[in-house]
Each structure stands twice: as C-alpha cells, then as structure tokens.
Length: 210
Length: 148
View 1 (cartoon, each protein chain N blue to C red):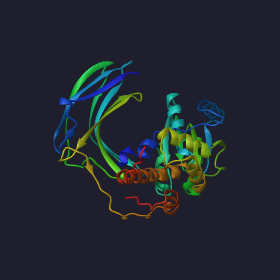
View 2 (cartoon, rainbow over the protein chains, first blue to last red):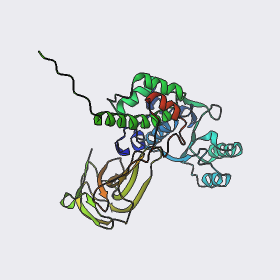
View 3 (cartoon, rainbow over the protein chains, first blue to last red):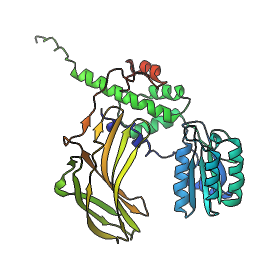
View 4 (cartoon, each protein chain N blue to C red):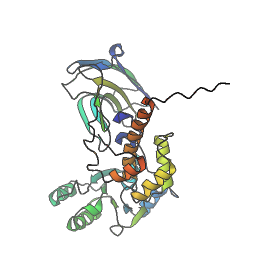
C-alpha cells in the first residue's frame, strides 16, 4: 500500500476536527467571553487540546477577533529571548493562543502571563495540567470516540475490530494520536497480509461425485 | 459556495522535471474575493509530520467574482513524485480564495518516467526502531512489525 492511500496518513488525520461531548463550540465561546478570554484547555497527551485550540482560533477569527498562535513543546522550546520578542510584538487587540504552556520555563510563563494581561486582548493556553489559568474545558477520550474517528477514516477495515481499538486505547492511556499512529502500521501490515493471502495458491477442493 | 477550477493543457498531468506546467484557472464565486492564489507545491503524506514545499505562486488581486486566467510554471529538477509504505511525495497545483476556505487542488506527477516512483521496502530495515509499540503491534498483528 502506498503511504498516500493509508487512511491514517498524517494529512488525513489533520482533517479530523475536535468532537464535543456534552458541550459545543458556541458554548465554549460564550464561556470564554465570560472568562474575559483568559483560560486553559487542559487534558492529557493526545486528547485533542491542540485540535480544539485550532478550532477555537478559526471561530474567534470568524467573529472578527485577531489571534496570534504560539506552539511550544519539548522539540520546539521557547527560549526566553524569543519569548520576549514575541511579547514585544503584541498589539492590544490580539488574543494570544499558546499551545503547550506547561512546556515553557516557569520564569517565561510568569513573564508571558503578566505581559499578556497588560498588553493583549486575552490569553488562551493548552496544558497537560490545570492551575496555570482557569480551566475552560478538560479534554479526554474514550474507546468509543476512537471507534467513531476510525470509522470515519476507514468505514470497513477487516483488521480493525472494536476489541483492537479498546486494547489500543488502553495501551496508550487514551492518547488518540498514538493510537492513530499505530493504526497506520496496522493498516499497512494488514494490507500486506491480505496481499500475501491473495497471492498464495489455494489448493482446489476435492471434487465430489454427485 | 463558489466554484474554483484548475484545468491543465491537454489534460496532461504527468511531467518531466524542468518541464512547463501550463493551463487555465476559472472561478465563479458568490462574492468578490480579495485575491486568488495559485500555487505549485509538493507535500508529503504518510506516517508522521507532514512536509510542504511551495515552489511558485501566482496571485491575482481583486479578481472579481467570475473569471479565468492562464498560468505557466516551470518545474524544478526535483523532488520526484514517489510513494513508499511510510511516505508519499505528492505534487499539486492549488487554487485558494482569500478570504474564505475555498480551495481546489489538482494533483500532478513529476518524474522522469512520467509515473510515480514506487519505493520497495527493505526487509527488516526499520523493524521496531523508534517505535515503542513494536511488540504491541506484533502481538495484535501476529506478525513482526516492519515499518519499512
């Protein structure tokens, strides 16, 4: 199977949007307004925080608000000099969206929070843990959510059973990103196995005289 | 919802590196856009992070709600269009409308043979490497995990 045909290819996964359970994007926008646009999206790795932040960004911009997004993680840290440069370029009408607030150094975080309170229209962050800002929403996943997403990506895949998805979800502690990455391999391998089976000569059934 | 269209001359969609890609774009939109942008780009599809390379763009400011225009881009020497199990590299022309999210994409092949290069796997080359799920996948698949 070509990588581009794999239903779990990265570009297809990027099209998956955040799925709400018990709330909606409109409700979140109302809550954000009530919170004066200072809030955190919390949850464990692979629970949809970044996806939700991207969806929120789109909704805020459609409302006419200006946003500025900063992505930080262990692989893309935020050195203090860069943090200061980012903050110095802020304008008061801008809402700052910080993805990975718990990945920046404590001193940078205090600087960030203090500066955005004074010089920006708001600060919305994602974080694995609570306590940085009031929590807007806590993201979590379920095996049923994984099943729903997988069904949308590949409605009929003989290699992917509900049991497998439950196992994967448990194995990765609910990290959907990791589950979907593994399913890429499962799909590739099952395709190879099917091809091998198709290419294996099946002996003809013995003829039975009527 | 408007309509955007990319049409390649003679419906040719496979090109040699360095060749000209020529054709016509058409648009019929509900409102007057600020701009239309046609890009010649490649992107990767597969496992892991996606890469994108934009080679050239043609921007039409204030194009009006309805119209058409011709385009001509020269392809670079590479990269070629290829596919393996882990990654595919796809060339495309992409027409986008600003503001809004209307986009249309026309895939092309860039290769000296006129066909996508298919990479064959090297058995066991990356088996289990950088993949903590290797043993887990082996158990659920019943075969060794070979992420070639």
